[in-house]
Length: 533
Image (cartoon, rainbow, N blue to C red; front, side, top):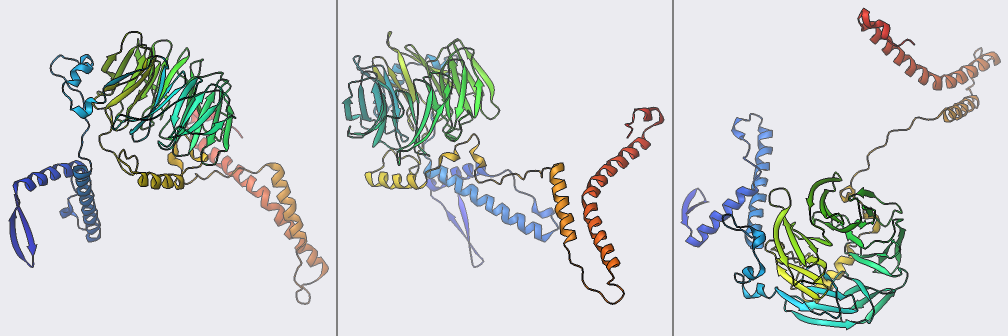
């Protein structure tokens, strides 16, 4: 490949090495992907000003396409994988043993089965970076695991029932919903806080952008507590009875609850009434999950159906029959995992509708309690009655991480810096709404309401009094007689009176004239249908 360099009207041709030629060709191909179609034909334009403006605009488009191509080339080197088969072979027939033969040793470490039959069933939670995992056994076992090198950081036995677990803003703190109260623990297992105001909690979720710990207790009360200063932000009675189904929409921070009547309600801390109430199933709702983009919601019911909903229109877009899912989870790339009994099914959105992508059967007798995809890895974690397990799901995780958002390799100094930035960027509870794009937008102007008859009369009296109190100027001889002054005052009062009825009469008269003109334009056969005033 030859590159022409122009310097002081001298043209010099430089031949690039083969490696650089390949990189240049690859960048050109990526640049075409980011260009906004073909450029405008500037030769046919006669307006010089418009021609100059469009030329500068096209130059900016070209620069932005080059920058995007370079970012994709150098900063996003990994591409998302996907399981593909040849001929009539189906991807859901591929087993974990077949995948284990083809992957490298580092990925093979993510296939394991931890058997702890005395403490299950287990609930799982991952940090935003996917580096750490928290496992909570029903019978009081709490374990914090470093998933990068498979080391056990800390495990404690609380000696009472654990219903749910959740990480807070990082791996240094986590919350556990225990038999009577909820507790917050440090990374080393130290008990930091006992949250007594919530009562016996069934489910816990953490809103990382707002630093709110949301929970729903046994009697159906929804609580929001700010973990930065410990105050209870909101306590809401849902009025729907006990529920074990709770999930947070990552797009807007709205909490969704699934109820025994088949409804899904969505809540925010600043409202005592639900934002949305959807009748999703004829029977009890088993599980709810949100797509990472926040526009899709998956629900499952006891009638053996999984439904996909479009939250922009609140419409059902797909129903998957014949599968009762006790737990649901969306991956970063949009794969949907559904678990029930000892069977897990992963659905992929390949052709615009969710269909079977992979499946995994566990040992008979295992009862799956929770499935959850590990961020930035093609890994699905499963908590069940005999411990917890992990399987490989190609194409489920985001291949490239942003170190400013979630860094699996962050140091202690970076973690402290990030914690400070998160606290400075903390959002108030009022920003939780269905459409967060409205934040910062202009409020639409309201139409001016028509004044009532009483308001018009009051304004009329004020105007008359003001007219009476006007002092008239003293004029020259012959024009300042008492009769003249009285006459001028009467004229001012009458003028003030005419101001208000004139507006009403003029509007009525205008409508009457419009109606008369329209009736006059009608044919003779239709004039009898015209409205008579």
